[in-house]
Length: 166
Image (cartoon, rainbow, N blue to C red; front, side, top):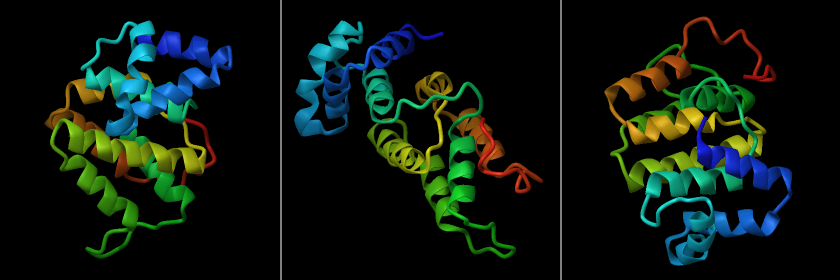
């Protein structure tokens, strides 16, 4: 279990809204300096973008899951939005968004696309497995992309309701 996530859970439990507001500033480059003192309290080195983003994403949407990965989250978003998988080569909007996410280069492009997915998940009430996400963005490679794709395009999973918890 990540020490960072344990600390974030503690701050959430103690309803420290100002702390989380400052962490969310990390998502905006021009406001990032507001997050640095808070990240320091979390023992995150300034310049460690992966952990900085994990903390900011958690502050944005602290609903957690212990299962699945971001492919699971994207599939649940697609189901909650009522998007159906086409029978032809035409992709649903979430499928296109997910393909763009998988095509992202490690770094800012990937983190920006993940930010959008987390905001969508928040709007749909879908929890995030932050422990898995922390590993996945640290080791962004073809294996991670394949694992996400297997969760998103899992065969015969369309019958499972989007209401079921992860």
